[in-house]
Image (cartoon, rainbow, N blue to C red; front, side, top):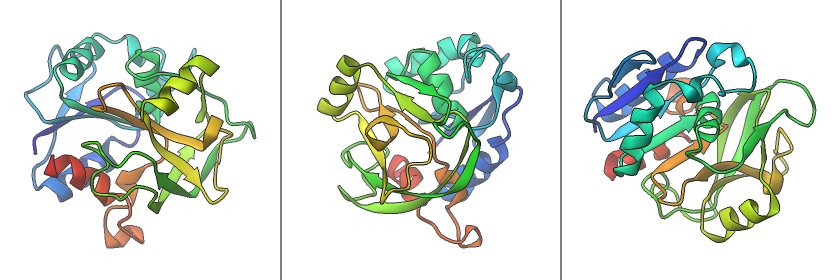
Length: 220
């Protein structure tokens, strides 16, 4: 699998993502700086977590307007798989590639802990390594992960299989509507989620629950 990691100023999980992709695929991803004009021919594009542009205005709002995001949009429309984790999720939402919005956690505090995720749609390139309804562990670290959508959008997301994961067993850390932790676009080739699967992919992390997501894309 050939992959690329998009890096914006202020991101701090790019090395984690690069390491995870390298370990799982056996090939180091291309690293694309936000000012680059193009993205190599790859199977997967990833926008990792952090605080792009210091999270000024709204989380992900400035990065979403970077010219490189037009290339991401083009590749997504061509069917390339695109993954946004944490701030990457926020960027994809701000860019209009995913529905809804991500607001301040209801606690108004930064949360950094492990949660439980339930697989809602296991029939996508990102989730075929899981079984429907399966729960697994995953760490979170965010201040603005409260997923919100207006009633019409929420009904469409729920009705068309665009919910990827829900927080399970009472572990919702941010107040997200319907416990939504991750959503797809309509084509199911763009996924955004707040938890960090790249931080639970090898024994040194204390478990490998997040590995199936990347292995699914590799198999696809």
